[in-house]
Length: 65
Image 1 (cartoon, rainbow, N blue to C red):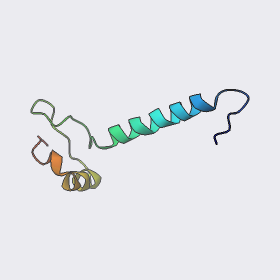
Image 2 (cartoon, helix red, strand yellow):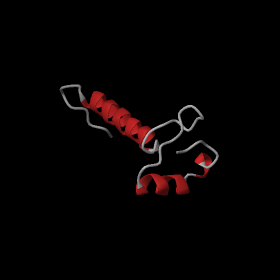
Image 3 (cartoon, rainbow, N blue to C red):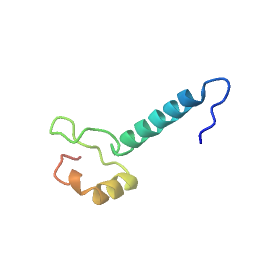
Image 4 (cartoon, rainbow, N blue to C red):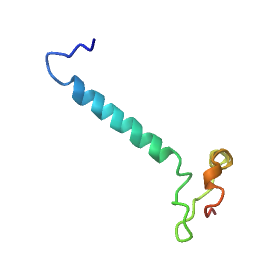
């Protein structure tokens, strides 16, 4: 059973941290910038970017510089 604090802030904190975590995960896979289109190719500028690209098969047909 979930125990709610008397301040009533427990659900707000859970929602905030969940949204923050989700936003961080979404932004994590964008390499060093770009969106993968012809006009805005992914920017591959670090070793971590290369490793991410190698492990993300769905991005292999996108535009990268």
